[in-house]
Length: 413
Image (cartoon, rainbow, N blue to C red):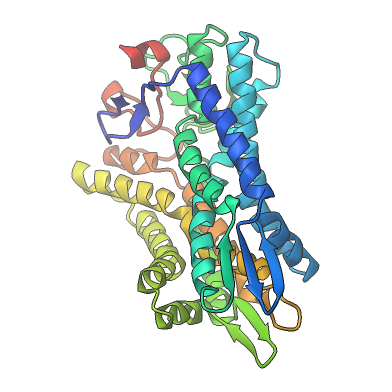
């Protein structure tokens, strides 16, 4: 493992898996993904009525109820983007193994890089457990094959997250299919930066203009452009969307004797009353604590730009990594609502419909994740020399946290 000697960020991690090992893992993940989405998660029985609940059916019912935005949003995060991640990895590994890279390989790697942070199968798995607990006293529940498949899929996708687009580019380097990740001599006084799409280290202009990457042709900047205005705009928009997400009902439960609306905190209280204290705490942390933590942490990172020492800046970098790590877990309540729509579909007895807060809460998750992606932690390290945003004098010992990636030969050394 190669780490930055300034901030400690992992630049390269050697894998024990060969190409064939990764290919076997990807094929297994694809099979398990098909099982998880084809077979029912659970079979529910109420008064001689039976429902076979699965994810595609839940998305279809949400669409039928008129919640088009919610259906598309959750379908992307729980189905299409995880599937895109698996298929992109399979396609890239097959191409590298055959020693022939297609001309659109850089575009496929960009798609993989986009899909990776938005693939939320682990959050969906936790939402399945929460939804089943909520229906434990209402219906007879028989777990289906998909619930085990989603558990296995969570483990496999977590392992597959190590096979990032940058790692695939390095596998292509080792196979001699693409140039190594350093364009020319980087020991001089020219300003260099790392392409965030393929990891290529190359010269960039000092005025901050973007230049096409010499390897994948994506636009490369010395630093992410306009981070201050972009991040603050996303933070403010997320705070605005956070208000209706907590005030408005997140779902509506209609039974033969009642018609009630529930907010996010109402769902936490209901789990607590049902005796599921552990799940109540998990839902409260994921739906209330995590969004506020992300927003407050981003505000702290944006308001403290003055250099306060190496140790403080390392703590700020760790804080940013925490914000990135917890980003997707706030989608828990949105997935729970979608799943309950399918599980409680007993016409005349009970029905669950999504409320307006579900879309608002999903929007908060998207905005906070986009704000974290727009923030550039390297600028905090730049502040130690009092350098401007557009021109900085580089030095080997002052390499930014993510500005350089070692070549395959350097990583192996």
